[in-house]
Every structure is written in C-alpha cells, then in structure tokens.
Image 1 (cartoon, rainbow over the protein chains, first blue to last red):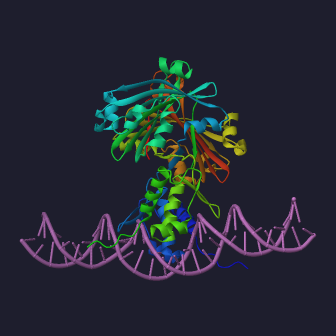
Image 2: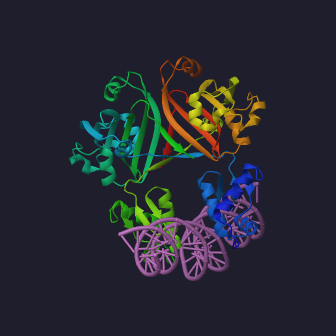
Amino acid sequence: MSAIQKTSYVDVKNAILKRIHDTVWAPGSLMPGEVALSEEFGCARATVNRALRELASDGVIERKRKAGTRIKSSPTRQAKFVIPRIREEIEATGFDYRYALIERTEETPPDWMRARMGRKGGDDVLHLRCMHYAGSRAFQYEDRWINLASVPKARVQAFEDINPNEWLIREVPFSDAEVIFSTVNADQMLSEMLNVPLGAALFTLERITWFKAMPLTYAKLYFHAGYQMTTRL
Amino acid sequence: MSAIQKTSYVDVKNAILKRIHDTVWAPGSLMPGEVALSEEFGCARATVNRALRELASDGVIERKRKAGTRIKSSPTRQAKFVIPRIREEIEATGFDYRYALIERTEETPPDWMRARMGRKGGDDVLHLRCMHYAGSRAFQYEDRWINLASVPKARVQAFEDINPNEWLIREVPFSDAEVIFSTVNADQMLSEMLNVPLGAALFTLERITWFKAMPLTYAKLYFHAGYQMTTRL
DNA sequence: TACCTTATTATGTATAGACATAATATCTAT
DNA sequence: ATAGATATTATGTCTATACATAATAAGGTA
C-alpha cells in the first residue's frame, strides 16, 4: 500500500532536536558531520544540510566551515516580532486610522541624536512631531527626524496628508535598521498628547534606519498606555 | 583569471527585492513563476526556489502552490529579538549573576491565570517569586507559575539554588510559547524589590509555554528601570 | 621557535532531473 | 445550472554530483 517514505528534512530536524534535548549530543559539543548524518538517516547530504541550516537559523546549533557543527550551549531562543504599519494595526481592530502633523521644522541635529545615528549626522535634519489616532482615541505619538543630506526629497514634502513612515517606505530604500524597545514615564507633553495620567508607563519603540552606513531617519514612537506586543515561537 | 560567476541565490534575492521596491512588480500582484525566473536569471530552479523561500520567510512575498507567488501588499517587517537567558545576559556585562528565591507556594491558579493558560489549568500550580541580581543591583523580579499536572517533577524541586527558567529548560521540553512585551508602573512591592521609585515605568515580559496544548508554565518578568531590548533587521 | 606555505576537511552553494502535493481550472454527467 | 471527477500547474522537496570557500592542521624553512 504505502510506498517507502523518503526521509524529509523535517524528519531530520526533529530527530536532531530530540537528540539534543535527550543530551545524546551534549551542549557545546561537536555533532557528526553532514556526510555521516546523511548516511545514518539514509538520505542525501542536501537534505541534512537544509535541516541543519534551519536549525542554525533557529539558534539551536552553530556551524563553521571546517570546524563542524556544534550544539549551542545556550540555545538563544529568539522571538520574531512583526512590526506592523500603524495604519494596518489600527484598521485591523476595526477603528478608523487618523494621522495629524503637529510640527514640522528644519533643525541641526541635537548631540544625542548625532551620537545615535553615527558621525554622518552633521547636516540638517527635518524634525516632525505627529500623532496617530485609532478612531477618537490617541494611539501613538511619533517623534521623527529625517536626515536631509540622505533624503533631500523630504524637504519639499509637507507630511500633512501622509505619515512619515508610509512616505519613507514608498520613497526611500534602506539596507539596515535597528529597533529598540523600552519604556518611559509619561511627561507633561506625552500625558496631554496620549491622554494618559502624568507618569503613566508607556511602551516606546525607537528605530534607526540606514542605507549602506548612511543614516536616513530616526524615529521614537510612544504608544498609548496598555499597549503590548505579542508573538509566538 | 576570473571564471564566469554563477548567479547565486543571494543575487536573485537582491534582484527581486530591487524590483519590488521599484514597483516593477506591484504590491499584491503575481510575480513570474520559478521556471520563468530561473530562465531569466540563467540559473537552476532550485536557486530561484531558495531565494523565494527566504523572501517568503522574511515576509516580503507570499507563496501558494499552484496559485503562484505574489508580492505582499503590506510587507510585514519583522524583527528577531533574542530572548537571552538572564544569567548570560548579566554575565555578558561583566557582573556576577545572583539568584534568590523569595517565596514558594502551591496554590490553585487564580482565574486570570487560568484564562491565560487555557482550560487545562484546573490543577494545582507551583507559585514561585524570585529575584535576579547583577552584582549588587536588582535586575529582574520574576513571578512564575508552574503547572504541576504537566510538570510533576517541580513539586520536589526546591528552586533555592537554581532558577526556574534554567531548571525548566533542562528538564521539560516545550513545543510552543507565547511572548508578550508590555509595561507597568512599579507598585509598592516592585519598587522595593527593584529599588526604583514608586510608579517607575518598568519593562515586562510575559511568557506562556505549552507542550502540545498542555500548558506548562507562565512567567511574568519585571525588569529594572531603564532596561531595553535591541535588535537589528 | 616563529612564520609561512600547503594540504585537508566540513560546510556552503549550484545544477539537472525527478516526483509529490495542493490548489485551481476544466470537463462531464446528471 | 450544478456537483463531482479529472487534468493542469506552480510550488515543495529529494537526489546525486560538482565545485567553492573558510578554517584548521600539517609540514617545511629561516
């Protein structure tokens, strides 16, 4: 009835995960090479390779050419967080998304920002302060700086009808980004903007974006009180 | 001197990303199939396949058998956060890691917890309250519940010399986990434990872990003031 | 001993060909 | 027209083979 089942890369993955958990292969130790494993499991080396490649990207093992593959002594469990576009995040909950520009100025970047973005931040930056609403409720306050040396087109953009993020995604490609989650107590300005008590704990997301070592933009997003980010692993 | 360079899956990836950004292929639209692309790029279908597979796992495109591959209309940028083991996180900064158990009780789970962990939470749980220190500084307060129905071994474990996380990782395999980042204002207890002012904004990480629909453990971790999580994409 | 050159080796990637599978499109009998 | 069987098709995966590359080990020379 059933033909012989070929061993899939998923099977190999599971078999290896089981051995790691049963400490057949101890943490930190070297495990057999791809050729040995492919013989043992009765499959092609490419199959083992894919299994190991995925395990490595999952953070379970570490691979080095010639040196071989070893079990990570501290399996760095990693969580993938989807950073949603705010319009979709809000519209997904059934509310209308509304955006408002509060202030738009051209400045020379403050020192702390220059430090964050690297030495290339010597030029003028466009500073935008804006709000994002879900229906009638304040959802997020955004503090945005755009490097005018690397994004000159921003100088002639009003940002009154489109939010900086959507505009940037459409207009400017980026190569690297850094994301920082942290918290802050609401100060006077934030408490008024987000309609929360003074001192409320707010979730913040900072994002710095580069294109090949050239800083493009820095944003700090302050979420409404009670905001949370969820993921499964 | 230099032989003809074969087109790598990285090249294909980049070429496709460029086209998506230049809206050669509009968001939501169908892009050419693997065979067509492999002919165009002059490489094997497997090469294109790997490029597309990775782009899909990066959240740039969506693939379905027979239906084809289409550009995601909202490219869900995702950030991979490494959730470090606290001992390593602390020792990496040069401080000594110290752990202290504050309280260990067996309880019936409160309603809010039962709701979080699913219906299987009807049994007894082990409730642990503990602290993690970096040198002499309070680093993290941990509120941990362990489902004794699914982890009976925990009943005979004192948790005085080993922290719950390290013990669980070693003893209990899990299949699924949910992670939630949020914030909270320090209450009286937290302000004393973490040595922060009353009301300070604290970063919190909740984690629920299952093994095949069976809830194993729920933990809520409260970090010291100023804690932040960083990642690059 | 210190330093440079040269194997050696495990992983990394590319390829052509084959079959599997899921989802859609088409055809057929009622 | 409609429900069910059948064909078609794009992706998904496995195989065997080949060559590339990085890192280590081994060997030889000053």
